[in-house]
Amino acid sequence: MTLRVLVVDDQSVVRAGFAAIIDAEPDMEVVGEAGDGVTAVRLAGELAPDVVVMDVRMPELDGIAATRILTGREDAPRVLVLTTFDLDTYVFGALRAGASGFLLKDVRADELPAGIRTVASGDGILAPSATRRLIGHYAGGPAGEPQPETDAGMLGALTAQERRVLTLVASGLNNTEIAEKLDIAVGTVKSHVNALLRKLGLRDRVQATILAYDLGLARANPPGPDAPPQPHGRRDGAHGPWEEARDRSGG
Image 1 (cartoon, rainbow, N blue to C red):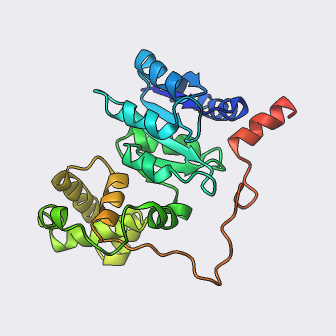
Image 2 (image 1 turned 120 degrees about the horizontal axis):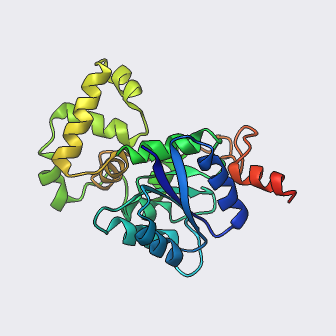
């Protein structure tokens, strides 16, 4: 099966970089490109992509509003947000709007197709390096203070172990790491994750993470005063897809 991808970004060189990386994959095809949210919504309706790679800050209609429209449709595409974390302060809003996850724009070339495959398969993805910082800063309400109207009803459906797993999912751990933490099999973790998603009526791990913060199960761990500053732009000398496109164009 070939995954149909719509690339949305207001910078043409960025779109070119992402499109080149995606089109190089044997199981993917870029079916369209858009430079703003209005065009993205229109093209998504015309082209029926499986995944929309979505920028946040764009003219006409921003990525959050466009994501909300797209995910509200029947047979909605999956939305993967790509953002420059230190600049885009609205990513949490995009996740609430229905995005299946986000990656930083300095993502390595191999990470972008992997992220697309992840969300297309029905799972969610969050950039590990930014998960706790992002959720901690942008979750609605102080962490650790459950919302009483939803807490009892929603969490009451979970077993004690499922609540533990939900908390660890919200901290950004994958199934293998959760299995090691709880000293259980990876297959058991998968069963717990599937069960809690089903019981809570959630689509994926991203929605589970948001809910865990909303209900006070997860607490942000912001860096301490002595922690090194978060890198801005490329990580560890990584060469981002848009930079590869710029190099090819001589810009």
